[in-house]
Image 1 (spheres, one colour):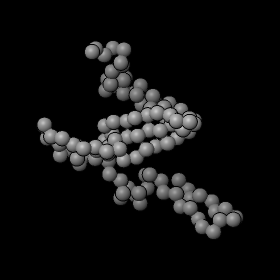
Image 2 (cartoon, rainbow, N blue to C red):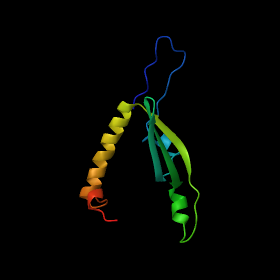
Image 3 (cartoon, one colour):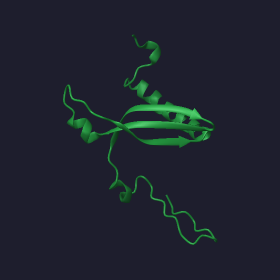
Length: 109
């Protein structure tokens, strides 16, 4: 992603680091989402995600407990949420065609 242009009145420049850049990869730790909570309040949509790192997940043993905390709350506009939901649905449909998840209508209790 290119750097943002400097405005005529700005006394500083903003450098945007893309998530795929090596500079940001040094700070990334893969995480596994095990719980989500989504709601809307006013004109915003809120998404809380509880995360457990891959390292913690790999260290789990049968009968062990793990404490997981909500580390971040994502807030977005209805338009951004609509785009997010559309993209999630595309991946969901792909997972269904690959047999990785089942359609709720066909699942049994």
